[in-house]
Length: 102
Length: 478
Image (cartoon, rainbow over all chains, first blue to last red):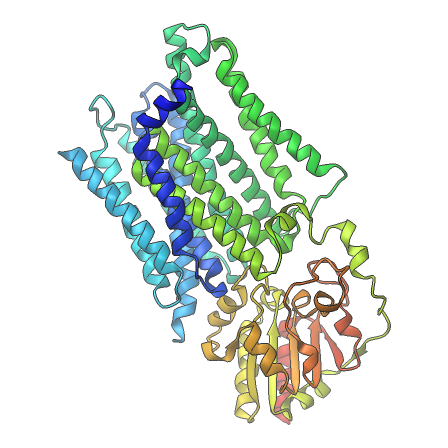
C-alpha cells in the first residue's frame, strides 16, 4: 500500500498527463464524419510512431559492446521510422484524394 | 540549457499531436493536420537525437547506427507508402501499426535486458529486489501490449491481402482467455522469480503475448478488420505510452495516450457506423461458419435472372436517373476509372448519375470515397447513406458494382441474420436493379442475399472493369 502511494506521488505529473490525455483524446475526435474514419485511424497510427523516440534513446544509450541491445535497438529504430514515415505518407496520400476535386 | 530546449521540443510536439488529431477529424483541415503532426514529430526526433541527456548527463552515442536505421526505415516507409495501391490501404495501415507495436515491444525487451544485467551485477537473490515495481510494470506492459499489437496487426494484414483465412474452432474464446491469463501470470512470475530464471520467464511472457495476438485476431471476420486494426492501433498507442513512463518522456506519453484514447473511441464509432457493438465484433465472430446457416434461413434461393450487356446499356441509356452503388468488387477490379468514364458518358447523354456510398462499403470506412476520389469523381455526386436512400425512391436504375452485404435486405427483415440491424442502402425502392458480380457466391459476410432473387433485380455477371468497358462501348453506339 505504502509502495503504491509512493509511486503515485513520485509519478503524479505523469498520472495527470495520462488522465487529461484520455479525456482530450475522446473529446477531439468526438464528431468525426464516417468518411474520415480511415484517414483519422491512419493519422493516429502515425502519431503513435512517437515510440521511435524511445527506440532512439535505447539505441543511443546502449554500450558499444552490448550487441544484443545494439541489434535490437537498430531494429527498433528501423521499425519505428517505418511506422512514423510510412504512416504520415500514407495518410497524406489518402487525404490528397479527398482534396483534389474540391 | 540544452535539456530545456529538448523540453520545449517535446512540448511543441505534444501540442502538434493534439492539434493534428483535431484537424484530422474535419474534412477541410485534415490534410494540414496530418502535416502539422508530422512536423511536430520531426522536431521531437531531431531534438532527441542531438539534445537528449541521460540521468548522468551523458549524451547519446552510436550515432552511425541511429542514422543508418533512420535512413533505412525512412526509405522503406516512403517507398511502401507511395507504391501501395488504393485498394491495399487498410493492409498498409495495419502493417505500419504492427511495426510500431514491434518497436514498443523491442524497447521493453532491451530495457529488460539492461535492468536484468544490473540485477545480476547487484547479486540480489530475487529479481524484484533490484527493480522498482513501477519500472517493471511499464516494461512488462510495453512488451505485452506491443507484442499483441504486432502479432495481431500482422495477422490482420495477412487476412486483408488474402494470405490468412478466418480460423474458428470450438472453445476458441476460452483458449484465448486462458492464454491471456497465462501471459499476465508469467509477467508476475518474472518479477518475483530468482535472478537466475527471471529472463527465461520474461522470454516466455513475450512469446505467449505474441501467440495471444495471433489467436485474438484469427477468428474475426475479414469484414471487421478495420475495427480490429483501429483497436490494435490504440493498443500500440498505449504501448508507446509505457515507453514514456520508462524514460519519463512526456512527448511519448502524450502521443501514446492520446492515440490510445482517440483510437478506442474511433473503434467504437466505427462499430456504430455498422450498428454493432464492439463485443459483438470481437466475440460474435461475424461471418463465421456457425452463423452462415442462420443467415440463409429465408429460403428464397429460387431463380435469378440475368441481363445481357446490351440490355443493361439500353436500360441505363434511357433512364432519367442512375444510381451507382460501389462495393469492394469495384476496388478489386480496379474499375474506378472506368466507372467514372461510364458516369461521364451517361451524363453527356442526359442521364443523371449519382453514387450511393455506404459508410462501410469496401474493406474500411471511407474506402469508396477514397477510391472514387482517385478517379476524379466529383465530391457532390457522392451521396451518404440517408441522402442516398431518399434519392433512391426516384431512381430508375441502380447499378450495384461488387457490393453485397450493404444492399442485403436481410439486415432489415431477417432477425436471424448476422447483419440484422445494420443500416443498408434500400436499392429495392428504385425501379430497376442491375447487380454486377463475378458469380452468385455470397459476399464477405458469407450470407445469401435475397435481393438477387427479386423480380426487379437482374444479374450482370463478370469482372467489374470488363463489364463496365463493354457497357461503355455499347452505350456509345446507342
